[in-house]
Image (tube, rainbow, N blue to C red):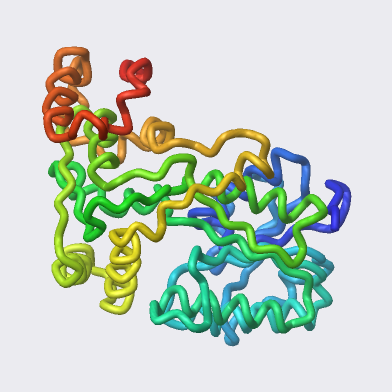
Length: 336
């Protein structure tokens, strides 16, 4: 399967989301026609390139996708995390079959399985199974935990805290931009039908190292607060406002990380996109403003003296054999 830029539009479901938006921009940059589905087309048009055709629609059996799917051969299936995610995706797959779609690239999750005890992983496994049994050509993209999730904890990070139940387990967080780049390849180039593409960041980090990277980026010290899974669940519910089922699924994933079973780094970005995956430092350079305290914005706070103090404090907390992840990136400290 190879979709030329002059062919029918590529349909993107979830076009204004974490992966969808950078994917749309990437496809347009490559010269492909894009059609985006949104319940609020006016809002979507303000977030997407002018050349993108935005149509009204959404996931679910009460949302008609027939107009969005008209004449489409290839779609990207992604959407928000809901308690009926697998059912919503199954209905979109049914609509794709009825419309004569050929290939579906779906954003799934690492560890997706119909047999998983983790609700998020099980729902993604159910959706994968529905796609595989549909008769459509398919590609599953299974990303690791997103760096972009840290944006949801900006308040904690501004306060100098980064909570997890991961102990010293390592995890290679991935930038959504890289997931979008892999999706663009799967949508437009041959050789990926019937494949599972696992996507991670380029480095497996402990949460202590992640906190150190935040310290370096924002100019105030950020400390990893390791908590129990029960404490993490209650914090996710009471402080972050997440539904309990999501909080429990996240805590379960972090138990997996703590056991050291989620540290594998995949070369998918380099293999398919032709460049190294984006690092956490690069993500923080791009999103630094979201994590700044008002006082951090004052001129000179991130100058050499302040950073040396932060680095020295962090260095004291690491054994000599386990340096902070950011020690290899000293040359970037003066960038805004």
